[in-house]
Length: 395
Ligand SMILES: Cc1cc2nc3c(=O)[nH]c(=O)nc-3n(C[C@H](O)[C@H](O)[C@H](O)COP(=O)(O)OP(=O)(O)OC[C@H]3O[C@@H](n4cnc5c(N)ncnc54)[C@H](O)[C@@H]3O)c2cc1C
Image 1 (cartoon, rainbow, N blue to C red):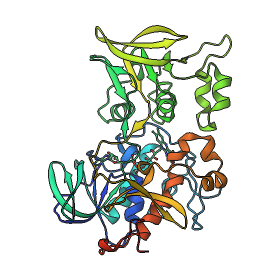
Image 2: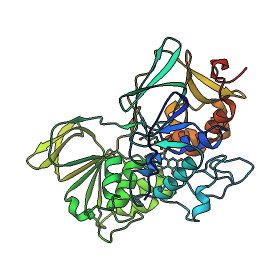
Image 3: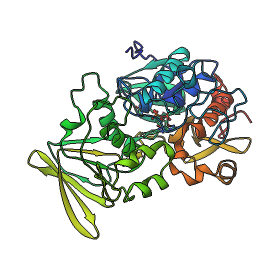
């Protein structure tokens, strides 16, 4: 698959978008002048572009695009969409839950239609020199007028002590990259004894893959997987608390006398370390330190922001008709948009969409931020960046 690399990034830059995920695609789709986009990975498409092929199903339903712009759970509008985009996920197929590869391809097509994208180009720092804003990208310095960070959920978190081990210990993105590689020679049975740590969306889609319920079902699956941090004890408890999208996983849980394939372990992992060629997972189970030995450990413990040094200003909300749409560093033209802005759900959003409050994963959902990112892109003037107020637009 083409990754659309561009040749050489040259400065000075007018606008720079950092990250090549859906929020970069939304931003560039709503600008008159195409910004430069830099992506640290060698693939364009953001979080869903890690793999060569489908590895997991998305958790937002696919719905046709409506021009009235009203979206979100409980409406007729689409959940995964690119306002102003030339191609929408629902143009590609009618699957109720599309695969991550479909969304990655749509993001990629929208981005390269409207912007110049540079791969293998990590943003390493943003700083000021006199009155000039500067960035360091892959060890080179450039002058830039405005920086828009669209770095998504950030880097995988490791909330336990990870010692040296030669066993397979993968983060969620590593798992997706490896099993989704065209060169992948693993079938789930080659993973041996497996522990999955974390019960959020990442943990659930990894479990679906291991249970043979993912989109590229290899026809074989694992007999038993230990799922750390999963507090549902049986099928009934799991299906009651999870969204219907994940109901199918429930049948692998303990259910009376029936044999089961998922062993939920409601415990906090303390450390993962070497035990010969295998990995020793220590956890606290009912207050007692408890060890388990595994061939493969996959941790899906959420994400923390990427470590990019920024100028030392405080952040302020950028608002559109009173609604927060992004954040901005007060003293310079640096914005954060999409989930990397980390906007908290305010009373207005709670009132309009109670599901935002009830399902924590929805706070980062595309349907929540898509309109905000598009509004930011439409609001910021091009060119005369110096005339922009701290709130992000000409006031
Ligand atoms: C398993 C799972 C399933 C999900 N399913 C859904 C779903 O169905 N619907 C939904 O709405 N949301 C879903 N989400 C949430 C969704 O992934 C995010 O909301 C979305 O990807 C955010 O888009 P983004 O463009 O902001 O960032 P991303 O798609 O994360 O893209 C950010 C990009 O920035 C790049 N980057 C980071 N740092 C730098 C740097 N320093 N320099 C250059 N580039 C950098 C990264 O490499 C990445 O490519 C899911 C999340 C997970 C984990």
